[in-house]
Length: 506
Image (cartoon, rainbow, N blue to C red):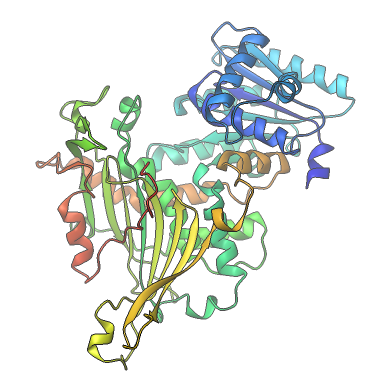
């Protein structure tokens, strides 16, 4: 793949080039791709924004982000000097059509300099309300007329609800081919998330047991210790359901539940994911009451420091009805998964930050061991940890050393840090490389986005129409509201939490 990349001149136009996302993620990712030899021989990164900056000022901002957030640590002077030659800045007003003419002039200049047509990637690292105007003006300025050489990258959220998602998809599809549109969900770029597909479809021992006959239930937990920070205004209009469930967590569910693809092409894989979303049981009003839990955090203590409740956070409505916690029980109505519950939960200000998928297998049909041998008996469980550690572990029963027949649960573990010496690339490195390669496997398609919205709209409408009278209903540093435990306990299960093995909570 490196030979392909090297031979294709590429221009990155980053709308919102001076913003937080560019500094924390995009800049460091592009720099690390450069260090690892994954950037083209001819490339340019054009940052855009309303702030008056010189090329040197913009380069200094990117360097600041690299030094603070790059997995490779602070930039070495010789490497940075080489990389910074490819950085440029253009003051722009995204509402002004003349701005896009200037982009066209600059792109044409590189085309002449390089002697060939460049690939141009327009990255919209801006607020979603700017997506339509930017996308439309790029088209009006004829900056994306060649569908084989131009791509537009859009950050989530993809709409605020089903109606706005359809409007955005309709707008984009009238301007661009679907193969030009890259809806980026950084979770899909995480190394362990990608390994779910490798683990499932490269090992023949798993497929025969990956079904309702052997799996009792599935849990997907994405929990965060952090609060709002400076995102209070955005989050108060979104909530846990929109911010995490509709995109990240449903995508994880699709990877676990999808049918084996015929091949590894992007459309084939995305077709299988859409099939899962279409098969998921829709919610009635009664289902929302019985199968969902929402919560909002109050004051508490995190690592010895008192933290405010959600309604006391900066830029948050002091009477907010927005949920900071969501737990939902889903069912997938198809032959493979009929009757198997999928439990999803996510929340802010919880006891630890972690992303874990737990697949619990059915118990043995008959225990042949004496009672005293099985006091610590646990059913077999497959655990996929995405963060803070990256690992896949299978929990099985084994005999404890000694003269007595005593069984213990033991872990058979694949741990990235213990297996590989090189650092795993950051999610944005993987996804930015794929945009250059034209590989849409890890990007959401328009119909995926709409199916996910359609699934959660009954929950959203119910929660928004009924103000919660018990918010806040969990304290910071807890595992969420008690009703979340009751949701899964009614079925005889409990939420699984992966021990951190002495690692500091994040």
